[in-house]
Image (tube, rainbow, N blue to C red; front, side):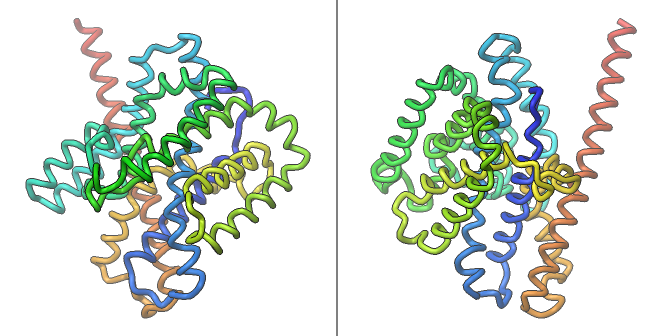
Length: 350
């Protein structure tokens, strides 16, 4: 983020979201004896934390580029180059590793599409290579359309109107466009940028009001937190009865973001969350690869199928994903450094 105000507590939201998703995937892919109320109610719903990623991504990209794009202080070429250079190298490593494991023609097709980062535009997109990568596909679709989002967020009045339109689109998609008339039964609503646009617009609206949030909510931020927790408890308790769950979650996660903007507490803003935040999306993308590796090493049930084994596996996967992310990023940085050095020498010699 390139503004004077640093919203450091948002690091904590990213970190907790990544860990929550790891826990959910481990629980869903194992046979641990944790079929208690905690598992059956809370853990499966951690899958929705990807929507928190979307709201945070929108808010973060607005902090860095909204004014620059609106005032023509950055070219589209620079903007897209930065997006590709930030995302593609690490994701490419995961795609190639997955392709080496699968080694079949469909995997090759899916890998090629993955490497374009445009796979979320496919009809009925459901790519198995880096299965969790669908979130990246939707977020990158948002990046591709970001100049248009800046237009939609040009002023507060237009932003609220855009938010209303995205809510209407969200509901229409559920009741009409995402029915068997248009999509396959296996189609996942969340893989579609139109369906998810409500989260990105919400992040943008919060950005437009960030100064007001800092001014008027800071003294009573605990009320925002308590209200967020209350809405979360209601969701976990009655989510089956909530008709438009993701619209409800959009409100809940928006409140958590508002709380984080004003928060100075150590829970969200500390060295650990800051460190994890920098590689949170890398951890998200690679954690299932690490999980499969731990599974091959027969380390999933060190203490039987007890909750202790679940906790140990979560720790192993998280640590493994952290080390993998750091090592791959260092290798990528060295490769970039080499090519930059080689490019400069070539330019000097010519």
